[in-house]
Amino acid sequence: MEIVKVKNYEEMSEKASTLMIEKLNNLEKPVLGLATGSTPEGLYEILIDKNKRNEVTFENVTSFNLDEYAGLKNTDPNSYHHYMNEKLFKHIDIPKGNTHVPNGSASDLEKECQDYEALIRDKNHVDIQLLGIGGNGHIGFNEPGTPFTSRTQVINLDESTRQANARFFPSMEEVPTQAITMGIETIMESKEIILLASGENKAEAVESLINGEVTEDFPASILQKHAHVTIIADEAALSKVTSN
Ligand SMILES: N[C@@H]1[C@@H](O)[C@H](O)[C@@H](COP(=O)(O)O)O[C@@H]1O
Image (cartoon, rainbow, N blue to C red; front, side, top):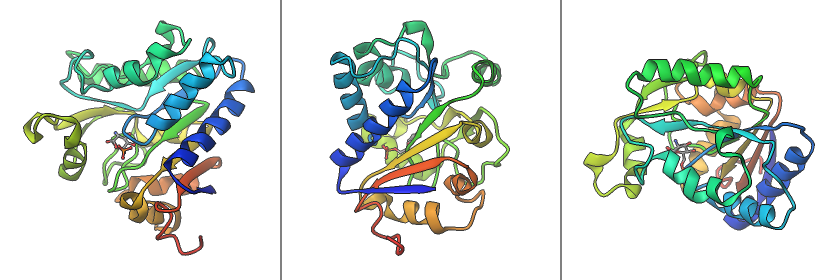
């Protein structure tokens, strides 16, 4: 694991954009794995800006998002479809048909998972996977206890995850109880992974990610076994990592 320590959220976003653009510019048809949540928002703003200034193009990019809430329509303001359209896709030159987010309102969710997995396989896996980290160590929506061998699947959300994401919903009752997420093995098949973390509330998770035991009880710990992971984290997120 390569750990890049930065000062704050702004610097994390800046660093991530530089790294990502450098990698995108070196690939003919990049397959990008994208994440949602508050963490990548700053990065997406910079990518939009750099795309407008022709420093990067997404014309040949195919993207796969990590996850989506089950039961929300793609037009729901809290869906990750909506998030991605508003915060990135509609502002950049990525062809519409090249973006993929699991369909959480599919009538057959199991089939949707299999189809999504097949699409990723058809593209020969993700080249650059962007990740955030949940306070309980989840990546995508793979909650503690998820098998390391899991593929794209329907998952029950932990109460702590629902609470952490309740800030985006009008009330706790409206936070979905299930989601579709790329599996751990699906994520591990990405050729490169960039994980972003910012803020004191991620400090414990980041410490376990870097120094903890590799265990299904803390899904992100599997990243220690991946050959090409870069963690870009700010001082607050790295404050519990003693070696830093
Ligand atoms: N499913 C998403 C994850 O993909 C994200 O990385 C994580 C952290 O979110 P945030 O960046 O808002 O802290 O939790 C969410 O539930």
